[in-house]
Amino acid sequence: DSGVTQTPKHLITATGQRVTLRCSPRSGDLSVYWYQQSLDQGLQFLIQYYNGEERAKGNILERFSAQQFPDLHSELNLSSLELGDSALYFCASSVSSGGSTDTQYFGPGTRLTVL
Amino acid sequence: LAKTTQPISMDSYEGQEVNITCSHNNIATNDYITWYQQFPSQGPRFIIQGYKTKVTNEVASLFIPADRKSSTLSLPRVSLSDTAVYYCLVPVYNQGGKLIFGQGTELSVKP
Image (cartoon, rainbow over the protein chains, first blue to last red):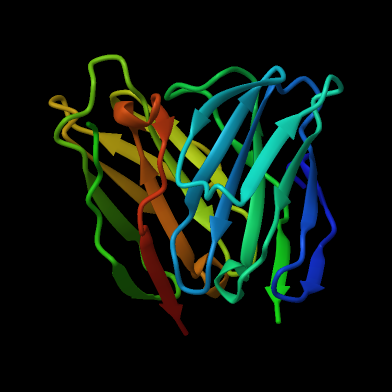
């Protein structure tokens, strides 16, 4: 158990809908990262928040947005969903803002299925 | 831009030692090398991290030569449960210094 929690574990929805994924980081961690992993694909970095502020952006679509709240939990909002958005979405957390020694701890993921 | 190259897949048998080599020719002077393990449908798990020479923990060893342009993850006496994808990471500075996951090495351990 990494200490990172994600809800829900599974989500099934229809095209065009909007969903919210939630992540609670490990106690004491200030950074939250979001990743997308499609079937047989690598982990795609989406976005990072550090202490409530956006820190880095990766391959995040304009239909997706995220935020980190004062209690440091984070939400990833996915809207106008398409079939291709079906994937595992992982949240990770780390102590500081990044760098080669800032180990990321991953949550169990949310499996999103868009029908 | 620090990029890593590692084999896409490897096969092994139970009880053997497995060595996965990763090249990172452009690693920056102060950067560490980090390895993660990922089982299907689970989030990656930190295995080991090192800067130079040799690092060992209860799971694996990491060997880094003096020029630090490569590193080798060594898994002693693998079992079926070591079947997973292994990622070698160094920071990528055109992505804000983040650890960007590549394709990794898919290790398959057979009985």
